[in-house]
Each structure stands twice: as C-alpha cells, then as structure tokens.
Image (cartoon, rainbow, N blue to C red; front, top):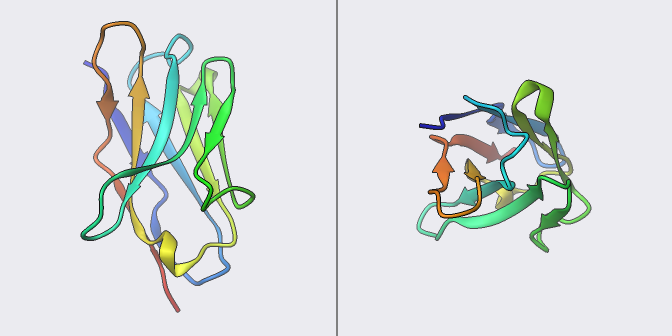
Length: 117
C-alpha cells in the first residue's frame, strides 16, 4: 500500500513562507496526479494545488500567484512552496496521490499550518 508522509508545517507570521514536503513510499514517476488539499476547522477539505505526471499544474484561485507545487520524481517527493501566507491559509494540509485507472487514491496524515501574528 502506498504511504504518504507530509512535513514542513508550523506556525508562521502573516506574509511569511513555508515549504511543505510529501514523501511517497514508492516511485511517483507513474502516478497520474499528486495534490495538496487543506481543511480548516469546521470546513470541508478542498483542493489547493495539483500536478500531473506531465507536470501540468492546477491551483485554487485563492492561492494563485502565492503557492507553487512541484514534484521530484527522483526523490519520490512533492512540494508545496507557500509564500505571502495569510491567516485564512491556516488549515491542516494533506497530500494525495491519484495513481489513475481503477485503483484507489491515497492520503497522508496531514500537517498543520497556522498563520498568525
């Protein structure tokens, strides 16, 4: 079973930056899509950013121009660089792997990001 482990969350002041990492237990070369989602207290989990095997990216409107998703196939790792952070970015951030085909999706355990002064 594919395992995903997120890291890099923490407490940061508004305007600051964080880089999240998601390490996958097997090669991500053939995984169709890797994504970052977030869930704030009392709200649904929503897509933040995704990147396909062909490196096509997709971002939520709220993070465009501030966040960048990337993947390093050699390290089986997906990153989320978050700049100009705002208090409304506070949430638990989850990594998701969508292998494609008929197989299941896989989720990490999440990492907390808190933006506060």
